Amino acid sequence: MNSILLYSISPSIYTRCMKQSGKSKNLTKKIFLFAAAAGLIAILLYILFWGKSSRDAYGTLTVTNLDVGKADCAVLMYMDHTGIIDAGTEEAYPVIDSFLKDHHVEKIDYMILTHYDRDHIGSAVSLIDDYDIRKIYIPDYVSEKKHYRELMDRVEGLENVTLVNTEVSDSFDGLYLDIIPAAFPEKLTEDEEDYDNNMSLLCMMRLGSKKLFFTGDIEKDRIAEILDSSLDIDADWIKLPHHGTHEKKMKKFLKRVSPEYSVISTSEEEPPEEELLSLLDELRIKNFDTVKENVVTECDGHYIKVTGSSSTD
Image (tube, rainbow, N blue to C red; front, side, top):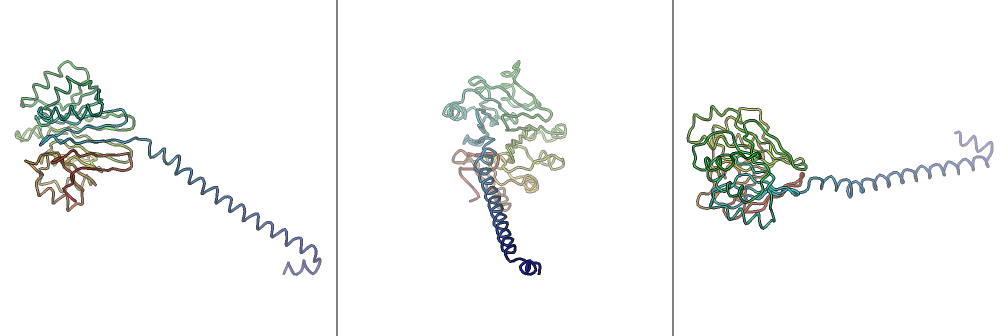
């Protein structure tokens, strides 16, 4: 109605107004298209540059669970840091030493020995003798095992040794370690046969949004202690305890951890128990073992990739 009135008063003014209105609409359209293009460019720049730098901020953690028979030894490499969790048997030392030399390792930033059984500390003294180890973490209990005394004699007087009796944390350029001892060791003494295993140090490793959980050789009493606690054991990856032995509360334990991947360190002569493998399959946890070869895990803080022999394919 206003347009008709304006046209009746002055056709020329109406024409100029309509042209101006058209220009305004075109300008608005151009501004909208420019803003949309600028937004798209900003998103692309975020993905290509800031997003990439965010993804790459952590570097890549590589965990190699070595094929050392029914024993444990994991070598961890992150940026220019190297760590070891457990040291296999003394017979495994050539394998461990060769792996470290092949990767040009001269210093070891941290070594965590979960407990004092020979299949976890057998090569520890040789590693201490041959490599520059900056930090050594060992559990704070007395063992009756032969290799315990040999290790204690070697580390006596060293300033880089920490006896872990309360939770200890460490970090290496964005890689975080929480080393966790038994909460109630006095209760674990009731089972003398499994005491060393149950005194294993746990190690929760965090890089970005991903968590890797090392469990030593914990057995039923320690598993029960953990399940009765408020300890946060949720993780994306787990080194399964005690070389693939199945325990009564293992299902509840694994549901609490809820990993996507698991690794068993054992041998062809003593393979993982079928009941455990069936449970892993039931829970849809992809399992790898060192029966035939090393298991290699890569983690960039956002994703985890595991290669090696899988028993749940």
